[in-house]
Length: 375
Image 1 (cartoon, one colour):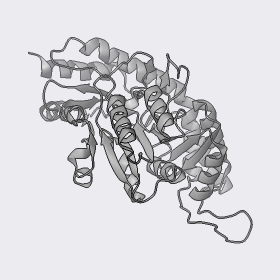
Image 2 (tube, helix red, strand yellow):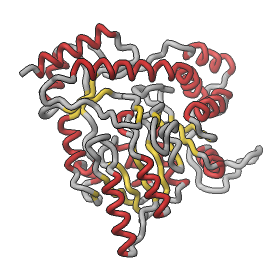
Image 3 (cartoon, rainbow, N blue to C red):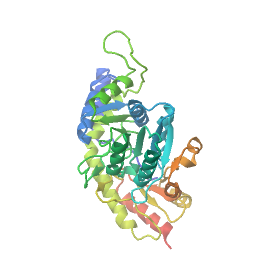
Image 4 (spheres, rainbow, N blue to C red):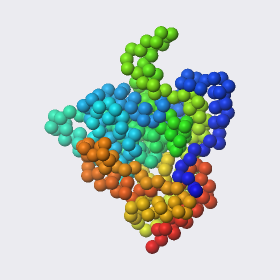
């Protein structure tokens, strides 16, 4: 079986883990946690980074730091993994779902602008925050979304879990990486991400006050010193030194991982471009995607193609079900028709794209797909 996306543990992972075991720093205290935070912040170009237990806890912490409370509204991508929106509900707030746009598959800025301007004209309350996901490694149109958030006084939070290393190459954000433009950015190091720490997440921000409070809250809000004194409700959202050691080793290899992901995407693009009815992943101008998952839109529903590829020993996965189609979010307001998000989850399929995928294995995937989709 050719897997969809598996970790590449070919660097210093074993060496750093052995160092943790030899020094007994295996829990949430240890030098690799601090090192991971500092080196990650330097890589993405953010002054501050706070390690967390996973990407979901990073998003939850960002919402807490943004002051999201029960009854508040948060604009959020409709087409995203559920972990983007779930923390909004943890805070007792209401998600307002935003449909995708065709050219990036990300949150539609036009729908956001129409909603915010209508609220302003009516004197209606504004959403407390806007939580935008960079889908499958492709940057969202953040220059437009940031301008809207600045204009209407809304916290901008980026879910960059799928897009570590994606960068803007043109326009007002040229040279900036995703996750560093909003008030806060959130990353995930789950096993199938571009780098992994077995789990784990990271919250980054340019605001020292937010970073300091985030670090405090993720460590149970315990004040320094020997006394167990907590000055507010805290959270056990800490990353272990073991996980951070993995993260440090993975971060050392990240440039090579990104180069391989983009090379795989180029090979797929060249080979699949002529297949009838097939839509290739977005490549919007002024943005450099990481192609975390290489995902295509099929001429029809993904089910038959997935089954056929699986029968040939090739693992694939459909894209996320749009949030508005699932019971927990069915009653949430939806900006736009939801048709784009629904089309993406109906026809979208991700192909094998591990950084360890060989050219021969990729050629096998391509040949199988060409055969299955041949007219």
